[in-house]
Length: 105
Image 1 (cartoon, rainbow, N blue to C red):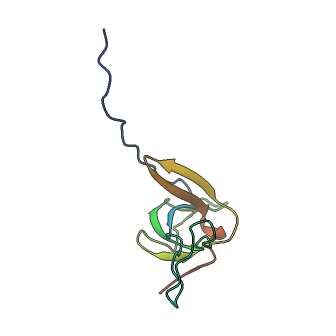
Image 2 (image 1 turned 90 degrees about the horizontal axis):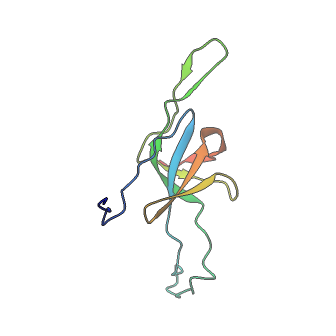
């Protein structure tokens, strides 16, 4: 007889190549004027925080080009694109570095 795990195993993900793992910012539920919005009408945030970064991409001659982003950076994301993944209870997005529109200072 085999023993069963009583809790799910936590997985981690290390991006490959020039891919960037991002945690999207939480949707706004309150306007600047203090009006509370229902969660159905809240706009999806187009910014997020970098969680993990791949090692970079190699060019034709074999040189490695490291990504310009690092974990903890806040970035501007496109409206569409990326791959949504779920790790545990958390939803994250995987983007190529070229797909990310900009970095906030």
